[in-house]
Length: 304
Image (cartoon, rainbow, N blue to C red; front, side, top):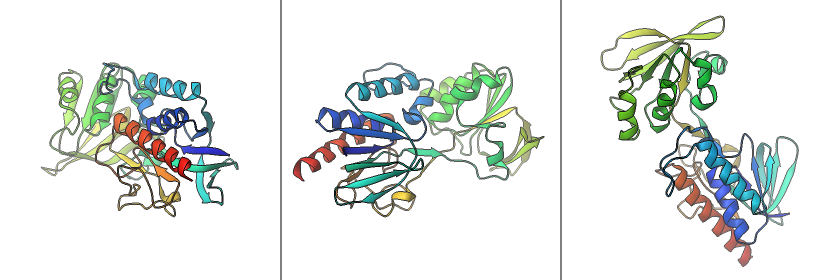
């Protein structure tokens, strides 16, 4: 029996573990993919207070090490749902295991959004990728496209520009939505071309692999094609909270409808990080949620 079961091993979940352990509680963190969350795939992070620059992977490693040094149990399993019990909660996993806890913190993060185009799912891993850190080296000296214009897209495009022959950035709006500093650095790259007000409305393939993109200019209506060896998607994120909707209300977009106190309508159940309804989703706000949720969980345990 754990005092706190934390579902999700990103910055929110790991920070929650650190605060809970320092509060004298015993904790297990259950993560389905890899500890560290989305930040682990960022090549360079420059907006963490007190740190001029660090790779996302290094930052994630430090978080994991900190939690483990304090005594956190870490489990790599896929949580499928939770049950309310007399003692608190039972957290069930796809692997057939169950973790019992007096309280639960859901720090589920989000998953990558896709364009929803025909054949897209089959092309993931065959020309479509979500992570330049993971897959950029496969396209050394080749031509690629980065679809998106936020911070993630700009960071990934900058990384790709260092190894690829040509990087074409496809942005559906008239300007970037990411940080001005990143945008300025990107447009200065000689091997980067930016197509604003443009959407991808189809994939070109050959023998099951991506060979190009069909583009549509939203201002002029012009339809064109470009040949690419790979395409990287950075078009937003989606929550995966439906399995827990019985215990924590969701908003219209599928995020947990929880205020800054990270509480839910179910006593003993808390939410933290990108899975929660909020305006700003950054590593610092995820960590803040983790600290708040863990503190609230500790107070709940002390009072019950």
